[in-house]
Image (cartoon, helix red, strand yellow):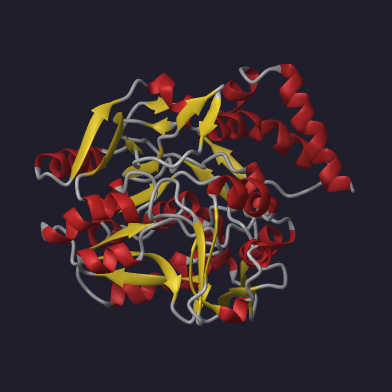
Length: 400
């Protein structure tokens, strides 16, 4: 990416993903913090110089995304694919506590116990703020499980990148698709990162809710934020319940269809609505919910967890194979066309990204630069009526 898009324009146009990469790149000038809307955003203490602006434009996933020679054949909808599978952790504790079938958590445990990495870096609930997130290091199974389960709240894992590197050794990184994309793009100008972070894992993401989303769940549960001792968005079953436990021991729960479907998805940051990569295209391995379908839409009934497992690089494919051989996960092949039945939202959003971007450009907004993602091909296959509906909806949102 060569276009010179500034940090300021990314913020002003609502393109920031909140990944925190800019803080690691420019620690003397940038600090990431929650803003009034409940999103993590960089705060700039002094302007970036020309060299820094160029580095920012090449790295920031809000400014743009670009594939450069992916190892696997590129699928327009699902990105680079070595293999598509479903699976689950053979450790019942991991399967139960993790999201979906616990495959990502199982892979992390395998990497640690096989000594392929010294630690894993992933998001966990903030012990001082149960509805918030914090970047954490895990070195064994118990610590991995304390970070298992989805965290539908802002997180900026790349803000702590230099602190993670300072720990020494090699580590696996787990983050949202935009986090992994930012890390991968940063590594193009810092090749040593590939050696220090040999495994980059991600999961499918429908968008990042504001902190206000979690507060809205608590309000519905009739729990005050100050009362909360622990809070989980999911896990402990599939899909699992949103669960708040108070300091007094009271437990309040809400099912996934209600928490995500009626509350959290109303608090998504703007950048997520024009995201072409909710499926983790830049990761080595991606895990997701392998939902069972009902009438063309996922059925969120509670059952034993099942993960969608996509390997995208030779490193990722080898990792999955080794974890299977070592008895950490069980998998079975999945036909590529079945993915859309499990993840229809991801299919529709990527097909409509181009029409939404065109609407933004018409209204004079700064837009991200997406290259080699085959968005035109997808838009042409998305149907005129649906593209027009998305174009008009985005234009109205921007104007009014």
